[in-house]
Length: 125
Ligand SMILES: Cc1ncc(COP(=O)(O)O)c(C=O)c1O
Image (cartoon, rainbow, N blue to C red; front, side, top):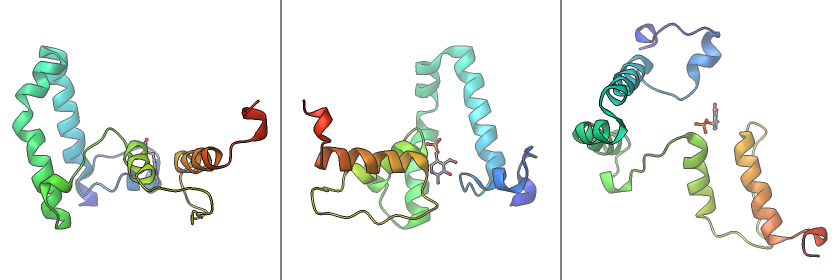
């Protein structure tokens, strides 16, 4: 699979981001869709690509052994992580276990939850 990927400046670390099995296919589909949007407009391109977009849910579900209705496709990793994290009802006394390798945007969500549970005195004046 790695050999099928387009060459990316920045070396192996950059190529490992995102975890795509075939980054070339993803890049080709993205560029193709952007070209379609440029030619006919975003809404029309989405409508024309509706079947392909819908197939993402079934294919993703088959990959992880879930139902298509358990798959959510969102615009980026931070949004996906936030949706999962903020769905956990946390409050005073709860603890968040995390790791040194946590992504910065995840840490911002941790801080927000802590501030909501324990508002700083200076904010309440
Ligand atoms: C572990 C991890 N989380 C989140 C992100 C942010 O991704 P996005 O820009 O899609 O929100 C990255 C980006 O490299 C990442 O490596």
